[in-house]
Image: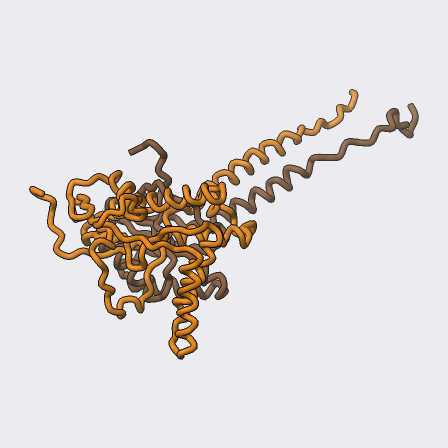
Length: 241
Length: 157
């Protein structure tokens, strides 16, 4: 009897199977990236300092009550979609309305003047380092985007909420506020640098150049993200309003 | 028949690919181990809120997760609990220990850039609970937070 040669099972396709498994696992794991809306909490010590008294017109008041109803600038029955245009109007004040914040005109001259005054004050022994840093940042921004208008320092977007407000609704409000700010930032960055702010931000840290960082900083200087989260007291329902 | 076979062809023998599956399986095993080590199983019912401005966090930064929601297992009760790592906690004070413990595993440079991601259910969790979490985070100076959301698709209301 002729001895049959032992036939080996063809194993070359196992590699293909394994590769498919590998590709599947890689796709699945990279999809689980953490995403969300970032925020920076105020420092603990901020509680102790005296509350800054801000003019009524320098605050954009957005309120969400226990029933998840929305009030913008003392008007009830607002929708989440009303927030974004309000935020944009508040931050740019296109009609120079009296009820909206008076925007500051920032240009090179103003920056240099202020820096000079502050330097004099330093010579007199006053500690104004923080203010100098602020104006230097503004000067940097002017160099990149040219003269610009920005909100006064005390202007804030205040999101007030009740203890019983659901997290989802609050975050929805916060998201829409961010939408407004981001739209302004995007259009400014597009106009000045030809790339939107979101795209600038999305550049990975390792490849981000100093120039990119400076651009981001400048855009943030023009349209700062000043959101304050306030627990509201005595928030009643919208009934009848 | 000759005893010594003469090579009929002088072609190079094909490189054996028999070991290729082994290599690929090793890589596969590595990925499975690494990825399953990273995430802990969520024992709470958490449906993330949606947000249009959702952005992806930088992978290179350290992220600590604090989850809040109603536990799946009824023996933990029906009210909102926290989950820190594997543990379901009722006390918000545990957040401090948790953050401290996480910090000890990293360098100072990493800690300065670390983010705490708050993974909370959009309906069950109220702002009262979020406030308590944020209060504890401020106590331990962990100020960079992330409200974990799902990207809202454009056009959907």
